[in-house]
Image (cartoon, rainbow, N blue to C red; front, side, top):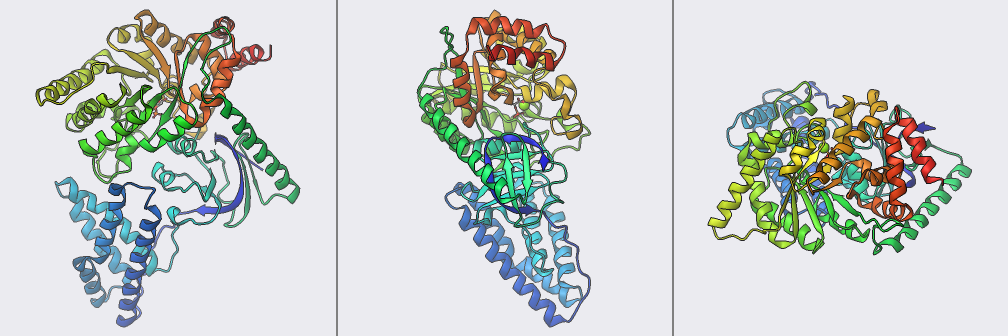
Length: 567
Ligand code: PEP
Ligand code: MG
């Protein structure tokens, strides 16, 4: 049995689909001209068929803009210049795979050197198409997640957020990866897709084969390969019980998030795209506490236009009606990259050029998003939130740009809501410590524990070896959370949390006791959190939280929480 981190709850039993991207090595041997040309023309045809297939699978799941990428790929595969150059190299005696590789390098180099962003994106298209093409010339099979059309559990070293975006829930019953943690973005996506996932399982890849039977217990983190029939029966039972438990939570969909002694909080959902709003509503969310807009940028092939963004934000605001929607401005960098935007190479990307830092440095990108948000503000109850604020000056600079765009829109005769709230994420310890001063200028806070914990403990959230330091219940983290909440309250502002800690059932009692006003989490966690809130006494939790703050270790804090719950 393997043990990993349960990253997205559920139990799944299915056969293994190993996601391994083979490294393609060119074969320099030239057989004869006719054969090499024939392999080439057949490979081009197979490549086109692949692209068509992937595209037809994606229709209905991806937007028209996202689908357009496949047309761009088909254009490359049919481009006479591209094909002609490869054929010429073959005629000059290069093997088919060498010719493909040479022409790829030539085109990619040429496009990457271009000033125009549009042409630079074409380099990514050429790389994509030639990877497929080269694989066909070498007769190597490459995996394609969007082509999966039978029930499987994916086993991989890691899944990128865009891999996760391709997964079709109908067939992909779960995934197991060697690396990652509860807060890695593929785990977060898995929760929003409601696919059970266990991550950080050392050795799982080399110990599984395609079509092995695998059990994924994403409640405990246990993973079993080729189990006995009795074990399968046991887990089938667990799968059914879990489904029943989920079903029983549904009676709380319209219930209030209120404690037994009448203290009310908000329990909202985190979303990664406009479609996720459906799950928040289905799970009775009191609002959207975090819309991670970077996925809008990551799923595109170029910077999304003001219009595209406006439409996405408007859709979410309209769907949520009079419920608050907190939209976070672009938080790119760290483990989230954009294929079409060059990032400087950094030794410590999580401590570097990311989120608000990048946006303040690239007002061209930032202003487009701010305009889209301001325009969308009239369609619902909007709050704009800036990520990775470290200083009051950064917040002022961001607000100044926002105000400038508000003025521009007003001059253009475009309406902007006057109810708009503007807040910040507290995810850098400096911001928590300076919360009182930040609260004087912000309408609200939302604590981002995924980053706050990594920065406080100086432990990379993606690094397995230091994952023992990812300690949400460490008294130092609780103290910073308290500083943020108290700072906000002292200035009459509200304080929420949108980091993964907010959705942990065990964290709810202590966060409630510390005075947190809003809990925002994956949609699938909302009802369990509401059930927990409704079982608690606020006054008792306040006392419990005070005792937790006196503790020296995370273990002592957990003992106090468990003690309070077992009463
Ligand atoms: C966080 O840091 O807690 C957070 C919610 O943001 P992200 O996980 O997107 O960095
Ligand atoms: Mg963060």
